[in-house]
Image (cartoon, rainbow, N blue to C red):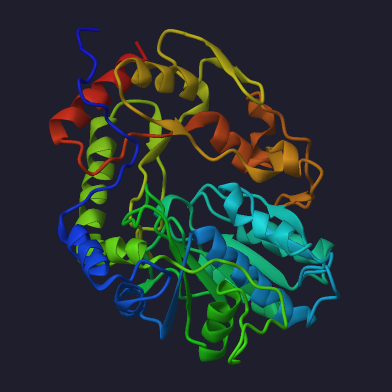
Amino acid sequence: MNIKPFEKKIWLSSPTMHGDEIDWVKDAFRKNWITTAGENVNECERIVAEYAGCKYAVALSCGTAALHLAVKLAGEKLYGQPKPNCGTLQGHKVFCSDMTFDATVNPVAYEDGEAVFIDTEYDTWNMNPDALEKAFEIYPDVKLVVLVHLYGVPAKFDEIKAICDRHGALIVEDAAESFGAKYKGRETGTFGNYNAISFNGNKIITGSSGGMFLTDSKHDADKVRKWSTQSRENSPWYQHEELGYNYRMSNIVAGIVRGQMNYIDEHIAQKKAIYERYKKGFEGLPVRMNPFDEINSQPNFWLSCMTIDRDFMCRQVRSDNSALYIHEKGKSCPTEILETLARYNAEGRPVWKPMHMQPIYRMNPFINPDGSARAASNAYIAENCAADVGADIFARGLCLPSDNKMTPEEQDIIIEIIRKCFD
């Protein structure tokens, strides 16, 4: 392959800064608001709520904090005040998206609940509504669902909500990866009973860290704001009557987010162009881009991903910490492509390993559409893929370099590198 490694690394998705951000950070320094309060925090909350189309946004230290307090709120709503030294879920089961980052489901454990993982569907790579319906048949007492919009692609929310409504279940919406994406013209992060977004360093806009809880409920916003500041009571001294957390967003981080918000639509357009260039560039290869509902959803295209068609997978095996493959002419696999990209100084990564395959959660229930489950294997077993969609996507899928500072010319080289993997 007559291609030289990139002199400057091509990242999966790195922060894209514009200059406005530093002006608001300097403003915080000038006014000496180097704390978890200040004009940047207040304005950041206002701007994000206005953009999302909700009444209230509470600025927090990270998306995981927003998810934790969302889950905590849901548990309190469903089960009341917990016993001493017990989380609000108090041993109850919670249905969770299976194919996601573990920050989505860890808050269930924080609140002493048990995650039950719902298999993925191929149409959007999100929670399978049929599997969710089957899960309610098996566990009819479950009253909470944690739903993800994976890689910025909206889930089939109407179908999932209809199922939850029939069973009297609440929804925590994890829109950490999908801020700016729309489902039926409405922003993700505003559909659930409790909603969370993220401003982590690799997200569509960033504060280096940070997240937000989004809601139309003043009561819930006030509760989250109180919990996030160590649950201090309205008293002339430090009075604490319930457990609290140090989860508030820094005024410095808020300044970065405040400056970034001017560019969210620009970033989404750039990410969409990257997705479309990959789709066109891979024509003729036995691969498919991560799918979405072209009628009802507008992804934010945070990460462009692809899967290799089953018949064109070379032999690949993975342990918990390593992978091996054997190259076969006309075939490839995620391990080969990712290792090849790395040799050319470009960053990709595997798709999220499903939660039911993670060592920490391997004993948790896992539900397929037919109600059966199998022990997950790290190896690629084609005959079992129909029973475990998430494991199949993990085996055949990878996240492509999706940095919106990558030039079209650089992306053309990435495409050529991947095409050569099938020679």
